Length: 180
Image 1 (cartoon, rainbow, N blue to C red):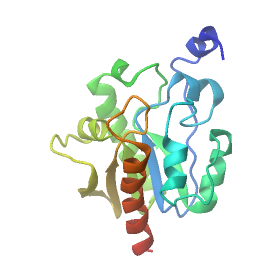
Image 2 (cartoon, rainbow, N blue to C red; image 1 turned 135 degrees about the horizontal axis):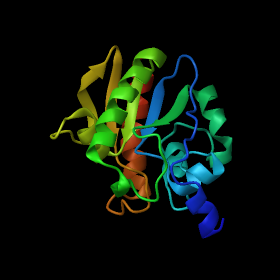
Image 3 (cartoon, one colour; image 1 turned 90 degrees about the vertical axis):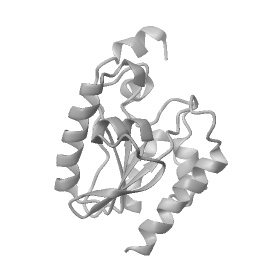
């Protein structure tokens, strides 16, 4: 993909991957330009979302971003805190995060997944006004949906390795399996 093609994807919206009866709705911060250009969530080659999903036991094999709709078969989905695509999350304003949190709350109330898994604790803190949130299960719920803050799978989040991310995602998988 050329730099011009990536730049042309700026501000595009990427459809959610959702269905009825989701066990876990994964929530990214916002689509990157590669995701917006391809229409596939977590599409940037350095992003570790898909390897982490597999390593943590959520999927029986590592899916390619182009296979994202298969997630629904496993009771999983994907959305974002902020819908518009950007090159970096630091291009987003706090107001966009807060508005995204309001929209996300409405979406969760409509879809009613058992768990909302926000992949980025900093985004969760701003979107939901919880400055003290840490990685792991949160006390807050949205309706009957429980919330788990996960490490951001971006390759830029270097202090989380694939192994340590898979361990944390695996904790969520075990909790999701335990309650249903």
